[in-house]
Image (cartoon, rainbow, N blue to C red; front, side):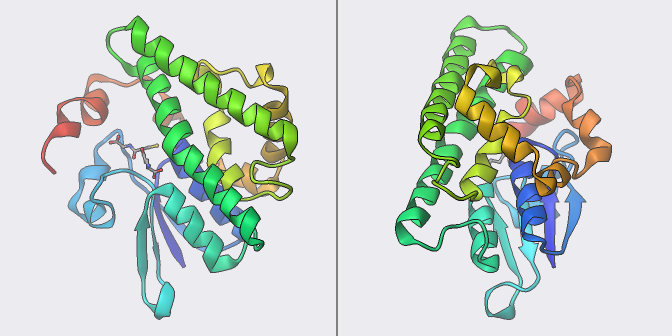
Amino acid sequence: MIDAYTWPTPNGHKVHIMLEETGLPYTVHAVNIRQGDQFKPEFLKLNPNHRIPAIVDSEGPSGKPMSLFESGAILLYLAAKTGKFAPRDQRDYWACVQWLMWQMGGVGPMFGQATHFRGYAKEKLIYPVERYTNEANRLTRVLDKRLGESRYVAGGDYTIADIAIFPWLRGSERRGVSVADYPNVKRWFDEINARPAVQRGVQVLQDVQAAAQAPHDDKSWEIMFGKVQFEKH
Ligand SMILES: N[C@@H](CCC(=O)N[C@@H](CS)C(=O)NCC(=O)O)C(=O)O
């Protein structure tokens, strides 16, 4: 059994989609990052970096429980555990890891900053809005070019690299990226979006999704971007 400690954000959805795609049994535990659940001692034991997602696999390696944070590490772990969505061929496998790292080091942080400065920053600052919107579009152009050469990101097969990138292209208008402007990304996005497991994955924690996407009030803003975020925890 996998226990997923999570919230309906792009990084959370990567894990929700993977769990649905693999068919592993799992239980969801909502970590309300707008109310500060990520700073609770019990969650800090799972992730000292106080970020979702984190998982605990009750049947980890050597039959012992395994706890993991960082969505990329979780995807690699679940792929290794199930033998699904990571290529067997070594060349294809490393291409998949390469694009997964590209998502973790590029798309996640840059799209995240674009969301922040376009939507959450209290002052509208032109420089960071332009910088991160440009970066988000530059990365989407790189993806578009790649998807002009191959059906999926890592090659001919759907892998954890696609699963990692896809949630960041949902609602990408908020990041200043219009999928319709990138024909290969659009073709790939529509195909992945139509997968039944993906549809189920993005519905995880459906009951809190409206609250998770609502504008911040002062309290949730302080928790995520202000004093509370930068206290010693
Ligand atoms: N590199 C991490 C990033 C995780 C991350 O940034 N999670 C966000 C939600 S998408 C979070 O938990 N934020 C809580 C906070 O900022 O306090 C991963 O991929 O798992």
